[in-house]
Length: 100
Figure 1 (cartoon, rainbow, N blue to C red):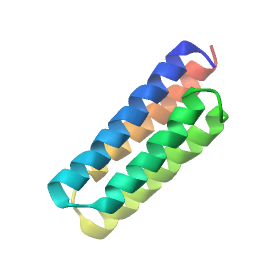
Figure 2 (cartoon, rainbow, N blue to C red):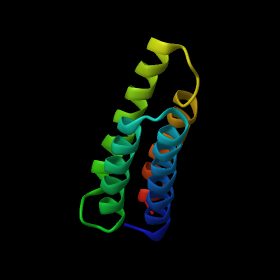
Figure 3 (cartoon, helix red, strand yellow):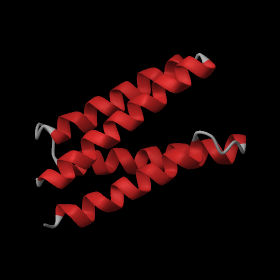
Figure 4 (cartoon, one colour):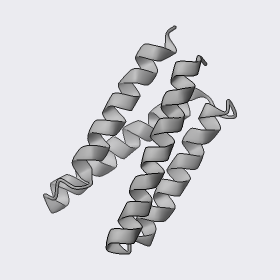
């Protein structure tokens, strides 16, 4: 895996974790904290080469689905829109950058 993909994965993991911490601080959501921690650890394991890239790609796809579903249910754009956008861009970049 090239360094661009690794850097992207580290950035994605950090942003996902930061979002979970923000959800915990602002709304007291323990589930946001726990899920973001698990998601960040999985992506970090991919960045470290302990898991294949496809694991992070599947996780990003799942997070897109979760946040689309959450928006459809609540009609609240936060945090759904930023997470959908971030995950979609990161997912696309893993495919583009992963080729080189």
